[in-house]
Amino acid sequence: MNVTHVLKLKAASEVETITPQASIADAAQILGDRSYGALIVTDGASGVVGIISERDIVRGIGKMGANALKQTVGDLMTPEVEHCTPD
Image (cartoon, rainbow, N blue to C red):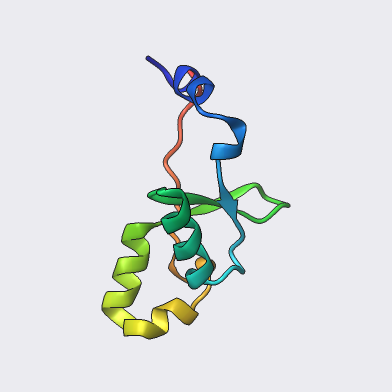
């Protein structure tokens, strides 16, 4: 099995993105509503600029408490995204 095979099993609408300017509260809402573990962060110009995961949000809450929900996705995202080719 390769990435191409996995992506063919998913509908295009299942690949969710969010901007770095979006709030952590918005990201948490999407993650919870869709039962996703992470969202790809894109800025339109550069493409993928990071990833925001449930773990990133939990770490932020651990450091900042409830104030983490007032941060932006860009503040808490992981900017280095590991990636691969479809093959």
